[in-house]
Image (tube, rainbow, N blue to C red; front, side, top):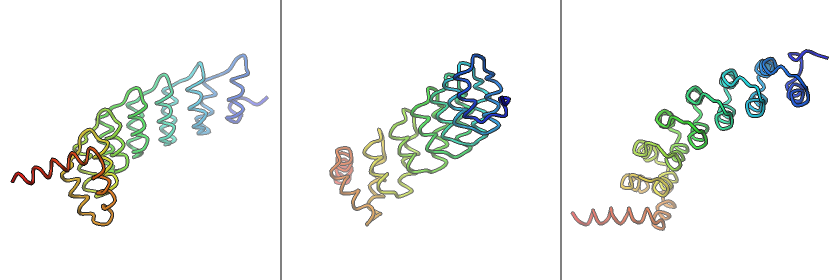
Length: 205
């Protein structure tokens, strides 16, 4: 029989499930050498013996933000700070956002700063809508400056706080693209309330 380091990742995985004795350290080293991110991740979830520090370092070295995120969600021991730094280095707005939703421990200040710096309008909107801590003032300014009517409208609808005055000006500036979203704003409870307040303020001068 081949030595464990000569086996494929699939054979090693099934051997752990069937063998009376199993060298977990060598098996993990094989997964790492073969860059088998899925097996590294699953081993961290299911194995009774697992080096979590070595595992997260391996996933970070492989540079796959999806598996870094998954490990942070599922492993019982995890270096969230190191993993978030890796996601920031990889400029993965999507998985930084997911981590802010699903990780047990998350640095919202660092996550917010990263997403704002990347100026990824989609995930600035999602973070503003769903994260319990987010700088909506700065995020709102970026969305409005980008002039994307759909996200301006959606932020006004779903965020706890939003700059409706400048958001509406941006929707008016975008004559053709903004037309649909101006119409939706007139039908939306939060936007109607904000627009009414704006018009009352204008009439008071």
